[in-house]
Length: 358
Image (cartoon, rainbow, N blue to C red):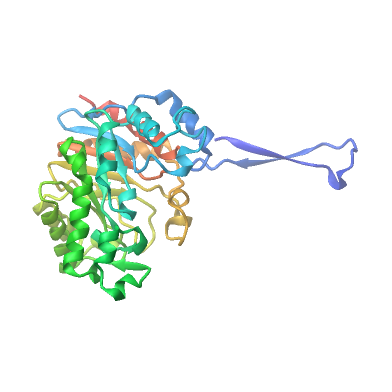
């Protein structure tokens, strides 16, 4: 464990010949700073650049839930100094990882032109998992972030609001939200680079027939595009509902997003490593920082500011490998995207998974 030192001046600031005191503070191994995290990652450059084929199973791709967070793009953190543009950064990221999750589409509907650029700037076998827009999963959207044609199609009372919910939209406007999303990701699908559309349901969505119908409606709307589902409330996996939740997803061949996150909250979802689709298994690592997990109005880079240690990742490696034996492809996505913590852990988990490769 590393230590940091801070020198204390002699009392009164005098220049008397006194022994100076040193205060040694244990360094937090889960938040050691981006420089030390980078040092952990440097010997592993390239280890995660290609999918890892698990013996008697499918391929595992490791990556992160962002490549554009400001803490990640800051000088000297992850990208080389000559990667100054969005294009440079994506091209560089794609030399180290074969998958990325796009979270910006939660806040703003994807644009076809942007998706076309993503497809052009990445290798042929690179995969994008796209997060569903907020309105598609029961969460609110800021009105100003919606396309002009959707805003103008809203009733006057909704146009006057700051935020709107999908449940409040007229049916034809809600349909247009989905159509716009599908149109925006079409270039990735056409290029064979669309992995799945990721639906993350909020903490106020509890297990119910209505919630399950909402998931099936999303599956119908997506057609031949694969969807994945993550829950944000532990009741989906309590004693009463766990079996029913997994049976529902398995019966409908919908991949469940397996999470690692802080435990001990009512919202905490346990780390159930269940594969519910033969096509895809997804692991998503949120970190284990309890003090920020339910804190309001903080940036994601603070909520998920947590560097996994080797023992924590080593506990997950065999579970990821086992899932890969039941699914054609497995994605291990680091959502602890604060600086280079996510990219460091994504490379470390890839290194651990090599012991299971064919």
